[in-house]
Structure formats: structure tokens, C-alpha cells
Length: 205
Image (cartoon, rainbow, N blue to C red; front, side, top):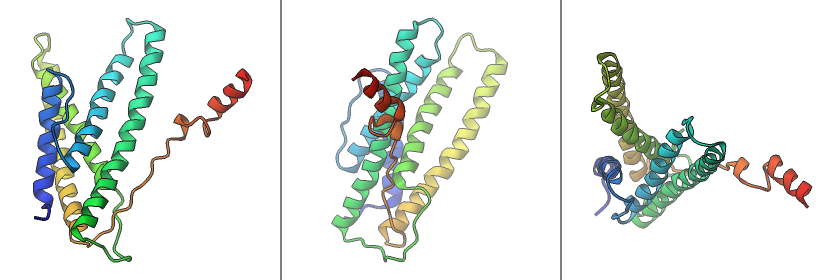
């Protein structure tokens, strides 16, 4: 039976929320199949990236530890972007298996489903950590008010993004729009393109 856009988007949203909660209590896992396996893998890199970014702001650790955290961030961010691309590639495979073929002149979207799913992944992390703030025993009323204001904004943005993704997927499944995989090409992680890396390699040689 063909995938239905609204159902798929609900599954993705549930996956994001469930795993964020679960991964804070136990090791990362990926019990999903098909496209959702890819979505979960991409989400894992956002999860790791989020917590490394928190650590990078600490002042009570050594410069060497911060340098390692920065390298971790670079690695996770590269993998995050690689798996955004993999999400879109998997969707193209799904469309092919369903015989969906958009006309050559069908419009493209400015954001791919993979990119929108990535944003929803980050939003799930943001909402989880904002809700954590509500449980802090040392939080005063002013802080709690700011948290609730941010959560209200998140709810609007999450709903808008969810609706937009659902509409985009519906158009793609119906062949009303085309999907093109956009390569991120993070040149700073490639020793062949980052002048700081290839120049230092020449100096070392």
C-alpha cells in the first residue's frame, strides 16, 4: 500500500519525540525499518551534536577537552548533513519503487524533505530540553516564564513545519513536485579543499 504523507509525518514526529526521551535514559538505539531507520540515524547525529554543543560552552574543562569536543562537533555535523542527503536519496528510492515519476517541468521545492525532517529533529531536542527547564528546583518565576514563552513559540513553529512537510510529501508522492538531492559539500572537512589542512600537510612533509 502506498505511503500516505500525513501518516509518514506523524510517524517521524513520534520517532523524534520517543527517541529523545528514551536516549536520555538509555543508550542510543534504532529499532526502526525502511525510511524510518534512516530518519532515526540522522536524528542520532543531531542528538550527539546537541550535547557536544552544550559541553563546548563549559568553562571548567581544559582547552584540550574543548578542542576534542570541537572535533566531535565537526564530525557529527558532517554526518548529520550526510544523512540529510541519505534521507532524500531514500525517498527517491521509495518513489521509484512506487512508480512515482514527476514531469521534467514539475516544480522543485526550496527545501528538501530531508532538510525539513532535520529541522523537526532539532525542534524535538529543543522542546525536550526546554521542558527539562520547567522541572528545575532552582528556577525562578522569571526563568519559567521565559521557558513557557519559548515552548509556545516552538509549538507554533513545529506545527507549521509539520504541515509544510506533509504538504510537500503529498505533492512528491503525487508527482506534482520533483525531488532533487542537494549535496552539502562541507569543504572545510575535506583535506583536499580546506587550505589550512592541505597547507599544513605540505609544511609537515
